[in-house]
Length: 227
Image (cartoon, rainbow, N blue to C red):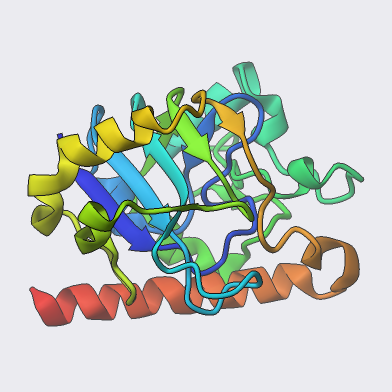
């Protein structure tokens, strides 16, 4: 069991997507999606520049990977079981707009991109992750993040990229701490920090695509530098 921790700079409800009873990580973070396995934990920590202040030592979400499928398999799974994960940009329901099943394989491969928070600029980076991570055991706090216990501060990763191997001594301690807080899994205890942007920003699609691309590119550079 491994623990992947990273700084979730843009919590908009798309990556991770905690809606409809299952938390999914399908776009962004290609390195984590490519290497994480069933049984591993993925933890998104807050940003120093979040809309609600410096929450760099707070947990925004934590998910235990309970299923890992290819992105093509995820598209089929959504059509059969999780249709609301397929983005509907015209919907008044915010959750439908941030659906993460954005790659349409119904006509084969390469897939088409559904109108969503990403566009063609994100294709290469998104698809390089190859897999979708699903969790039926997760905690999502969003704009009501939970401060890490002092003994777990080491898992904080404030720059781009992620931390995993160095977290190994803290995996079991983190899981026990998370379970000791009294929160029931698979519930949303807050809303995405950037939810309001979707109501007031007319260019939110372009903004989401641009900043996610920048975040993933910077993360790849950090990983290559540290390799």
